[in-house]
Length: 279
Image 1 (cartoon, rainbow, N blue to C red):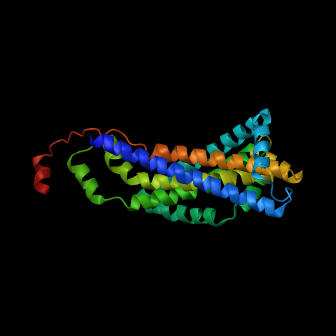
Image 2: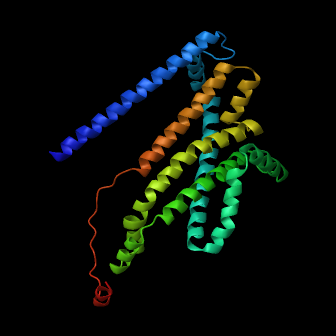
Image 3: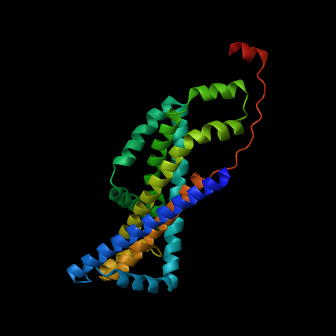
C-alpha cells in the first residue's frame, strides 16, 4: 500500500515537471517567433519553423551523422580523460600535502586561462608535433574538465565524516564495503555536481576548438561554414544539435549518478574484546 502511494506521488511529480517543461518550451518558442516577426529579416533571426525545416534536411544527410559522431567521440573522450585526471589528482592531493601544494597552482592556472588561449596554444603544439588535429578538441576538453572534478571531489573528501571511518575500523569493513557503504554515499553529491557542471563546459570548449581550428568532420566545422556562407538557418540548426546532445548526455549522466539500488543487508562482524574495551 505504501509503495503504491509513493509510486503515485513520484508519477505525479514527473507529470508536473513534464508540464512545466512543455510550458517553458512553448513560451520561449513564442518569444523567438515574436522577435523574428518584429525583426522581419531572417538573415538576422530566422523563424522557428525555418530552423526546424533546415534541421530536418540535416537529419537526412550522411555528413550530419558523421559530424555528430566525430564531435561526440572527441568531446566525450576528453570529458572522460578530464574526469579521470581530476579524480586521481584530487585523491593524491587529499592523501599527500606535497602533491596538493604542487597541483593547486596548476588547477588555478587552468581555471583562469581563457579557453581561446588554450585552443590556439594546443593547436600550434599539435601542428608542430604533426599529430591528428582532432586531438585538439580532446586536449582542450580534458584541460577544461579536470579542474571541475578536482575542486568538487576535493570538497567531497574534506566533508568526510571521521566518525564513520572509526565505525568501519571497529567493524573491520573490507575495502569494497568501505567504498560502497561509506565513501560513495558521501561523494555522490559532489560527483553528480561535477558531472552536470563539467559536461556543458566540455561541449562549449570542444565545439569552440572545432570552430577555431576548423576540424574536419565535426559540428564546429559546419558551424564555421554556415557562418561564412551566412546560412543562418543552418547555423541555428547546428546550434540546436549541440544543445540537444549536451542536454541528452547531461540527463543520462544525472540519471546514472542518482540511480537507486535495492538495499542490501550488511552483516556486521562482532568487534573483538580489545576493540569493545576501546569503545
